[in-house]
Image (tube, rainbow, N blue to C red; front, side, top):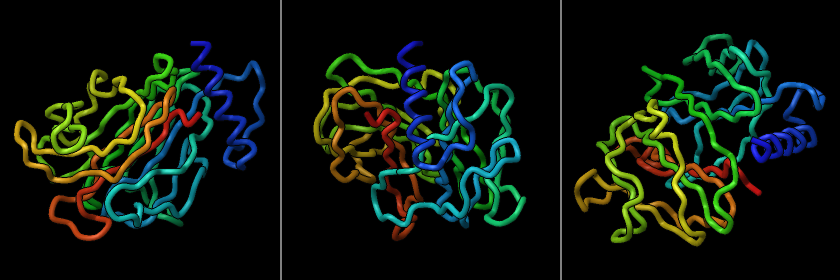
Length: 239
């Protein structure tokens, strides 16, 4: 718990210097963090709102084709019942919303997912504690609305890291958990579950020791450009 608290405090300090946080940290103030990610491939730009407070505006689904590395920070929130809304930019019209019971000294990721006509918010708890010394923590989410169940392997013929993952199946806490792998340069293949049919292979990703990362499938099978099936990558514990 102390490691998580120290990391969350570091995130807050970085947010303060980066202008993302709106409150000054008090050592006795309850602290939590929340990440907000637009992964609906065909949705228009969104505003991020937490408890009726605007945290970010005009954030679009990534224009990167293939694999994108996400860069927005965690935002500081007060623990308790937290209302998260993804609004159409410049309006109070929500694509989707969720109410989350946020725990003290805990980090969460929220994702706007699915096609624009049926968007929903997925919320997961982020275990940002350090991995075993010299190792890397990694997890995978399936956020491609029309893709079949997926296996994730190291390259085309390497070890299978994640098996039979279905769209938006991470409601089970077991499927939110991280595994540990060795650091190194990886390409991950997204395969139709139970087969050797590769639907997408990520670009090379550098997994550095003592870090924590999330990998996700995004886009549409059969889509074009940045809306095609691709990868999303984020360092939950950047340093």
